[in-house]
Length: 302
Picture 1 (tube, helix red, strand yellow):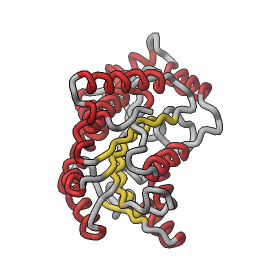
Picture 2 (cartoon, one colour):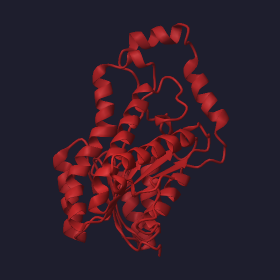
Picture 3 (tube, one colour):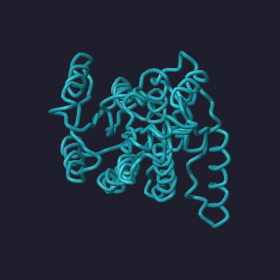
Picture 4 (cartoon, helix red, strand yellow):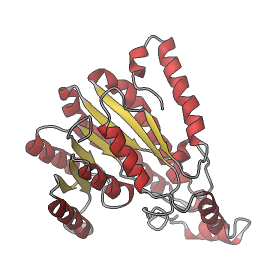
């Protein structure tokens, strides 16, 4: 067992990708894991059954949980079910998110609002349901799955996703300072580009304004979609597996209180995000100190 002991963990967006890998890895590490996802009785029924089967085969405290981050009632019901069964929540992993790919101008404003809702506002809904319990406990950990795009290299045609992830990352930083006096820690996980283990590009949304999309595809940006994806493949080591992100989260969760890093980068392509984040996080710590709020910077930048 890890130094922090068995913990009750809620992870959002656990039907596939980083979420599914992380949920399973946390369960394998001996934690009590609720792998939340939408529509466990319909679209994600097979994925929910896979969780149940894995738990039964390996004798793990691991179960799927119906939770839609866009629906407050769904969230409250899910959190209530965890508390009824376990009496506490130790760790909340904000993983749910969605990517979009295409020329920025061709996305309707409503699409940007929807992406922001999924990647940012959804975390606020879940926090408002979970944090009263964590504050009552005077303990807990928020793990935020961010993206190296928030401060690193930013290729075109991913603007809506990058903007949303940057918003989520900023929210995580603000929450870190506002929760530390309650005994609640924060760790931001920063994945880079991975070519296996996720289906980000395959499942990415696309612009609804097809006329403007076509204008870009037939104009001076003809072929850039393939150039972007080929360029990302060329700088990403072929053995880079998305499971590295799950391993990093397991390590953070398993670390003793007070030793967990504020930010962890898992970026095989090395897009520069780690260097920029190091400066930004240090500036944050120094500024808090200058205004007499040193204790709010208790979590170390890493």
